[in-house]
Length: 379
Image 1 (cartoon, rainbow, N blue to C red):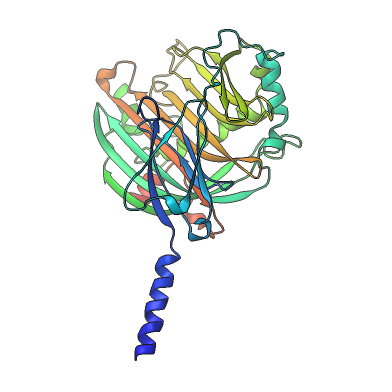
Image 2: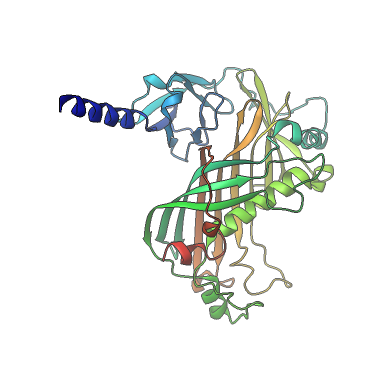
């Protein structure tokens, strides 16, 4: 009996110890104590980690096999911080402070690296198939979505997803005409509320006939737009960026990060359409992209253009694993107006995807993310 009990206890102990441990973080500026948004927290040389939100906070789980490693906290213009996993607290938030680099070059007025912004971008784009992981891979991720309608938070859900990524391979253009990613539902974590508006209801309010009818859509599924946008923006930004050869690109910022010099290269202005790459000066690796594409009224625009596609703001961050970049996090906000008068209705959809780890889990093709995701899995 005692032996049996011991076996059970040992088994239970093994089961508990073998589970991934979840850690919460708050990343602060050491001098000002202000939160640092978009800081990268990464288990060294692994895809495991997160990117902090606007309050400098982030949460992720670390499997037991990585307990002897360290996490690396890094951000442009700051010294990187290394903390052993064994020194982290699981019962409370880990408040970590990072120091601004004394060699930060942000205040430099004229940035001269011996080549034009266009030349710099084009070298980075030519090296996409060297700096990015180019083979197919599968990962698990956590997706959160919040909907705000007419100023009120009406709908929220959190879901675990399995993402099949094609990887980039510009040299042979293998994925130029196919989707970069396919996403499949693994588990609904939580859900609250219901949406007030949908594209079908918005069309009725402005007297617009949808060219293909409602196509069986009863609810807006922003998650579908989220992945379509992600796939399209990466194709345009990495594989088909003809605008990189023209236009008024400029070096917006230059910063040091340990032994790296990273440049922010931009086109447009913060008041209108805007797009930026963050690029490592030496390796030409693209670490982040961000942009804003506002809805612009025109005589040729149909009545639903302010609702779909609306105005889009986004940021994509990548982690390096074995010297190759992988998708780590995508934030996207879409602002929709029903007609051009906000009195008719205003809807803001905010999505955030954080890749948690590589995965070998078999996907259920019936769980694919598409335009009917909400009504299939959340009603």
